[in-house]
Amino acid sequence: VQFGTIRKGESAKREIEYANFTKENIRVELATSDADICLLSQVTLAELKPNETGKLSFVFDTKACKQYGPQTMYAYVVVNGKRVIADDYKITLSADVTEDFSKLSAEERQQAPIMRIEHTQIDLGKVAAGKKLKGSFNIKNSGTNALLIRRLYCSDSRVVATAPKSIKAGQKGSVVKVEVNTVQDGKTMEPGKYARVLQVITNDPNQPRKNVTLTWVVE
Image 1 (cartoon, rainbow, N blue to C red):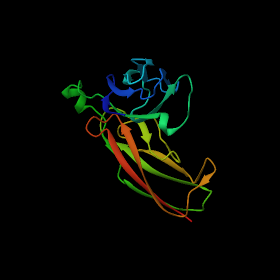
Image 2 (cartoon, rainbow, N blue to C red):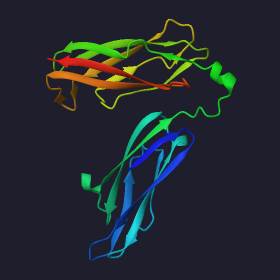
Image 3 (tube, helix red, strand yellow):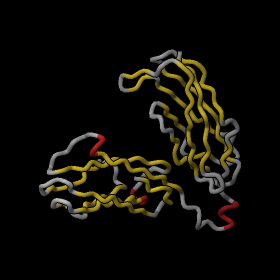
Image 4 (cartoon, one colour):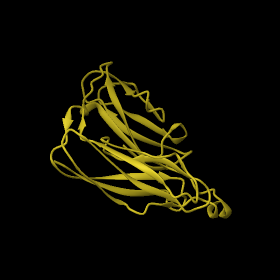
């Protein structure tokens, strides 16, 4: 289920139709994670007779969402009180939360921060399998107001990046530190070349996001 791009402060609703193709009545519920506080779910018809249909309703509320950028959530369909953690019962929901710059005045835009990343292709070098790899790159603010780092996002959870939350104008810049863990959940990266995209999300209204490509080799 894709909510698409949603501006901060807004919400979006999606529905999925379901049916009972068995010969008996069934009871349908939804189980979601407490961590997904921005996701509201509802079963429109909990008790289904044979051949009856109902709808699963999902509302993504960005006001409750603490992060900008891509969001992935999961819901599980529970039938007759039996919760099964399997793909057949799993619903994956995704959304992309963006900052709302639509109400900025012309003066506020003139005073806005400007994100500058000189190098967007970062070669982290070589690393032995099972070890960690570290690197960095620089972000500058050539605008007027402070540049706020909303989020550093990579779809690969083995890549972790950290940076100061705020960068003042006129500074030489701030360092974004990147760490790649070649081991996760007991699984080690296979030898070979790797490339991942790190998304830098800021409050720059003209270019709120910039992609930095990270490459490395596992030996």
